[in-house]
Image 1 (tube, rainbow, N blue to C red):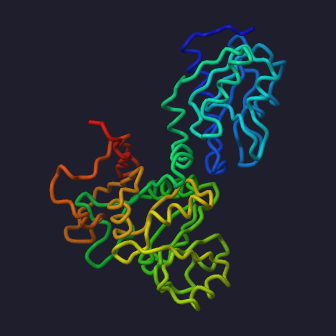
Image 2 (cartoon, rainbow, N blue to C red; image 1 turned 180 degrees about the vertical axis):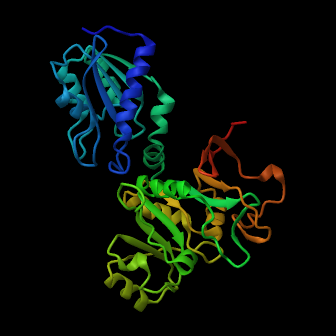
Length: 371
């Protein structure tokens, strides 16, 4: 039996499991990213990760990858093994059948169908089980999953590029090319790891973007366009390339325009209006959640960004700060109705990185009670 309980070794092997888990980015949604490593006497004898939704989970792949019998070995898993029947059988049953000497788990699964049940099953079977090794890191890589499984709505990332003086375009509306080529590749990488990307109709009218991730490897996100009156041309790129697009509209939209888009394979959602007559974003997020969209990248325009912030719907804010000044121009964020600094929206800096000539500010919604 592998009885090694050195904390540094536990963290080392959990970091390897985390690295494996990240290989599933963009392919496993709405499932979580999970990696697993099997260790005997300090040697990795098997490892695996969840590759695609509907396929084997990480633990099963690690067992099948093992180069020797895994009985008595230590299993490192980034997320609690599932204990319920879904698209695949419960992983905890497979682990128990293998009779490991020890199981080390990064984070508890927040799914109500699991939520500690896998841990209890392991311990009741006489298997030593430790929980919480690199818990913060294991939760961080699954921030999409945790938000989605606990609320039923997608994790929302708002991304925009702005000048040093807070402009996203000049007074004429000209915005190309505001940020550097490396920042553009980052934007495409973000598209590849989110289930969907959302813009307003103004962005389509101004730029006619494809909203794909052509600069990096990965799947293209579902395109979501806010168009309350269905005023956009059906010849726009997002409606004409055969890739999945959803248009959110209201009851004011023409039935003829709706049918025209649907003939082109576009899904048109009728969403209720908010008090200001715009698409109710909270209702839209609930509708997207019911379609198993667990993460949403918002790119579209100052008006859309402002509304998401005003409704307190943003979980992560990525601001690409470019070393340019234009003076008067288009503000990145419009009026939020805030008149006192005490009422300002609170975020916490996660990291600041340099990318080409730009700085990337990564901030997260501040949790109540944080300083």
